Length: 507
Image (cartoon, rainbow, N blue to C red; front, top):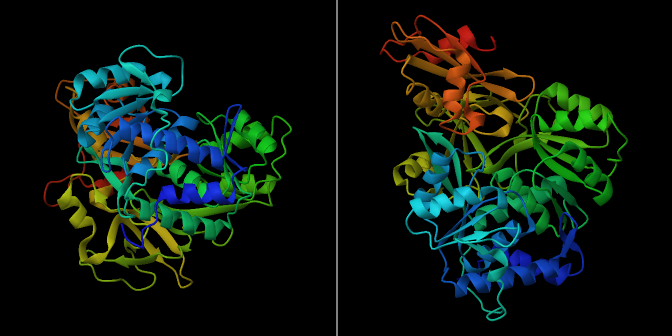
């Protein structure tokens, strides 16, 4: 510890002092003040420590949003434990990989994931206990979350440096395996401060927290509003009608969204009568027509377009109306530059890889030193995305680099290489190229262009279901076409750019 250290628990402690009686969190019919939140974090931290969790130990979480999920984050922050939130949309094999990769001592599962929790404790070595977040009194092998609440050691100070890992979030799979991005206390807090500055957040702000707490956007915005002393209205999962009702009831001021969330909210809004006059900011990624439709109905709201990623949080952003289609300007505390393949900075207007220097850049990939070193070469975090700056300093996103092809259906990350690998497991497929195509509902959809083996056949629907049975369903192709051959480059590799030209946007 040093005089420069400040952690997420210090933020929780500060809120309890400054805003003791103000709501920190609302979940279902429960209200928890900032003072209550700290006290619950203290008690669970004491229980975790008493049970053997120390700084650096991992705790896995597979659950929908809840008050206990947030309390667990706060308790982990106090003692320096590392939270590994697992994407509950993953297939069982993917969940197993994440748990095996990080080797958590304790696993916390929600009521919907008890079967998975029981399987993991029997299949993965090193898991000492499995706790149930919410739900009824569990049976073996589950332990009630409330059993962690301890009354001793509440005021124990734990030495947690700001550079300590706080969370490991597994990003989309490269070369067939998800990579765990390590986010420190320093990283998250810096992102919070930039969010507070950009959106003018204060203790009156109310975040509609329906994005999953395993997702960087759901977690980061929740913690940013908390750092401002505001209130998080937690929802187990997104529901359009409930969201609009809660915006009206709790005077919601902001939320983060991915397609098709905004469209679904608008469709519901136009069916009934809802007061959304309290909203000030909406952030996210969506189709320009949907954004314009929203602003027509809520002209008092600022919709923020942006570029960011799990590994770098907020990079660029600006109000959508500044330059529709752009990703905005570099955030405060963020230096953004574009480099060519030889790491030479490119001039204004030219294409280059988006690279970042900022205190909110992640610490590296869990257990992948070579990949971390490559991403951080020459003192910059290389995002793997390509863009250009215009003469006014606005970033225009163009594409992903070939080695980091990425498709984003509904805000989730899908790497074509991972989907291709699964498609090629099918006995009828000889070659495959997976690309992203425009989708009016999800923003982008997965399309597979396949070559069949000689004398083999398979229906597109059967191939789609084959993929969905092996990886998360959001990664399955929405469209499949069969061709006689795929174009090749001079070195015999599939010419992905030509496939895009031939098949992009064609359903």
